[in-house]
Amino acid sequence: QVQLVESGGGLVQAGGSLSLSCAASGRTFSSVSMAWFRQAPGKEREFVASITWTGGTTVYTNSVKGRFNISRDSAKNTVMLRMNSLKPEDTAVYYCAAQSTAYSWYNYWGQGTQVTVSS
Image (cartoon, rainbow, N blue to C red):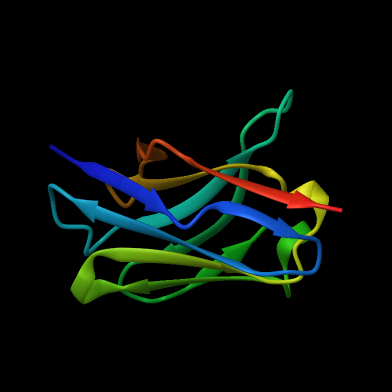
């Protein structure tokens, strides 16, 4: 059974930093991408960043470029999101996601972790 478990959310002041971690288990993720999404109250879930598991190619949504960094530790089946210069508009529940195949959308999801940025 595939499981994605996020950790590291919390409350931080604007301008501060937080690191999120996602531990994946239940199958090998050696050929698929993993990503972070977020959902703010009253808004749709949106893409934040993704990383290919083998090549390390990363993609970011424009609003977080230069502030967030996604990385992975293949040996530990873990994906991290380092968030710097946080803004109140970054407040959301952050979800870890993984593809089931290299050609699919993100089929596996974590339970989410709350990030709150106070002004």
